Length: 144
Image 1 (spheres, rainbow, N blue to C red):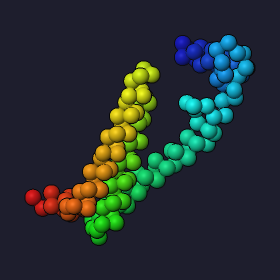
Image 2: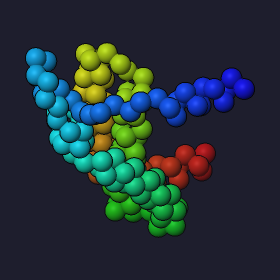
Image 3: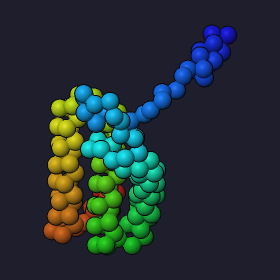
Image 4: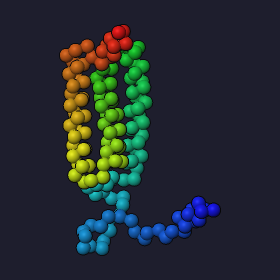
């Protein structure tokens, strides 16, 4: 019964007349929520496209895993390096978004994440170019 009362209160709660961001603290003008500000997305569909891109990279990793098993080579090594770094970058970025709430902490964490992602990608590319590559290294680990 209490849950029904909570749900009925939520449904009956008044909706705000205008949603948006104040242009200036002393101003009463609002910018609509679908226009671009420095911290907002350009359109509502941007998040949807980003979600589709994340899922595409995840599915691509499955295909690259199979390709690395069937025919290891330089192209698969570099594609794995790029998609692994991008996949992990997006995942850790979501962790930062969800759990880091201080303005300085968010900025520092994002900068550190970008630096680590760039260093990881450069290291994987160097490993692919100067050593055996990701596919052959995993095969060597499996043969132990």
